[in-house]
Image 1 (cartoon, rainbow, N blue to C red):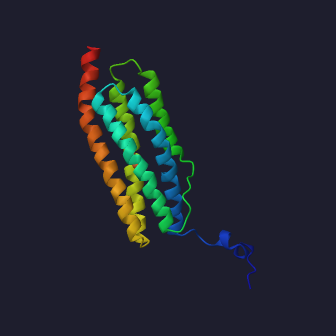
Image 2: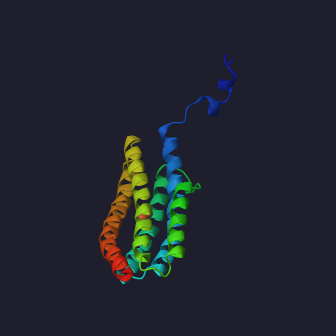
Image 3: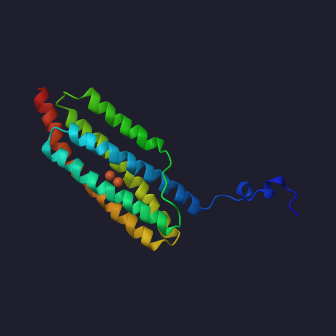
Length: 177
Ligand SMILES: [Fe+2]
Ligand SMILES: [Fe+2]
């Protein structure tokens, strides 16, 4: 029968299906959200504009909900909620940390914070968009709903940041002049 040594190990011989890819990305985003949860209070503390501070605080509360929703999605697919190191988010958050350090006393600080935060949101929007499409493909209707709720909050936050970016950029130029 199975003379091919590759066939003797089902893990080796069978290509990984989409549901495994979905589970892997879920772990990636779960890890990312937990890192973001740690970064947002630091960004709120660093921001000089009260509106920007408030936006970070509001999104921190929403992010707690994102972690919870992901926990529910894990449950829906019968898996324990677990994260997997996501180098992409670590890199994005490291850049944000560098902005906070390098521009601590600069009038351009808020503009830099908005830019860093938007990079985070865009990463999340990309990931949730993909997860939602894959959940639909795999027939996880309840997961689609949960992922879509989070996606809507990430998109709204991105729009808020765009609005706050205008005054932040203006302030940076005015104070520098
Ligand atoms: Fe999030
Ligand atoms: Fe977010």
